[in-house]
Image 1 (spheres, rainbow, N blue to C red):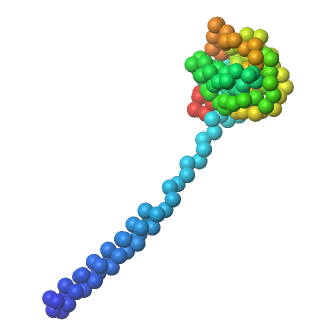
Image 2 (cartoon, rainbow, N blue to C red):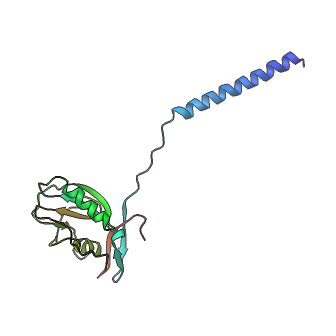
Length: 167
């Protein structure tokens, strides 16, 4: 095989490799980015009677049932400062005069722990319009209780939406 033929063959192989690399590179460049699957903020967890439920395990969604702008956001921030996990924040579908905690089970330890953060809050049956424990702050809401309750013991077996990553 002559030197010119070897050079031509080598250049042809290298040219083919460059073309394949260019096609592969272009396909990789124009491929859409992978989408991250949303991570759930909480998952249902069963607790037995006598089990401690702490603030960092409880997700709280706060909704504004008053005419005051930003009340739900500021209340959610105050609860987060106390160690609760912030859930959804928004406007309530219906107005409220007092602070309400919407729950199907008023004896749930997560509901009890959140209720103890508020003055004169009452548990009422309501739809789950947010994740975790749903609080609707009303017109008469002024501030959280100054005394912070860090945990409660479950009085009976219960299930609540436990914050992802909490122990």
